Length: 112
Image (tube, rainbow, N blue to C red; front, top):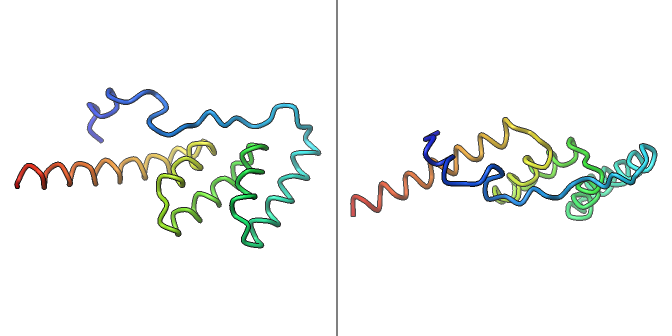
């Protein structure tokens, strides 16, 4: 990736990543909520599951939600989930793809 692009954006990029897990939940509460989130996710209630996983900070759940967003053609929402899950590989791949798309659009505009 062109390093000049990294200099333009803040450290967190353009994705809001301040959604922090609730630190007041006990391990038992998190486990219960994560089980509930998994049931909701498997039942197709993606958005409620996402809210639970964000509350508990359950990275595996956030990654699955992100992958579902990708399948639904929502790469920006997927990127947020991957960032919240601290999945550097998936985040970097999406950022690289976005940078290539922007670069291509700029190149096409220059040739007009």
